[in-house]
Image (cartoon, rainbow, N blue to C red; front, top):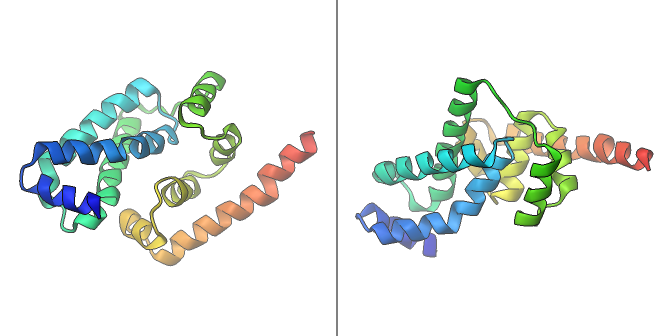
Length: 172
C-alpha cells in the first residue's frame, strides 16, 4: 500500500516519492539483472537507464499496484537490448558468484542451479521467487498465458529436482 501511495505522488511530480520508490526496488532490480549474467559495471549503467526511463515515463503507468512489474519490464528490456548490442552474455565466474553470495546472502547453489536452466525457465523462477510476482503478473509482464508461466515454473522446479540436485548428490 505504501508503494501505491508513493507511485501516485511520483506521478504528480514528487521527486522525493520517486526516490523512495526506487530505494524500495533497487535490490530487486539488481538481482534481476545479475541473474542474467551481467557484470556489476554494466548493471549500474542499466539501472541508471532504467531509473531515468521510469522517471520520464511514470505518467504512462496505468495502475500504481503494477509499479514493480512495470519497472522490472523496463529493466529487462534494457538488459536484452544491451546484450543484443554487445552480443555478450557473461557467465558468472567464481569470483562474481562469491561476491554475490556475500553481498545478497543468496545461496551459491541456487545461482548454479538457475544457471543450468533455459532462459525462459530461469526468468519465470526469478520473477516468481526473487521478485515475488504472481503467475498472473508474470504472464502480463511477459505477454504469455498464465498457464505457460505456471508450466515453466513447474517444469523448472522438476528439472532442478530431477537433474541438478541428483547430479550434485552423485558427485559426493
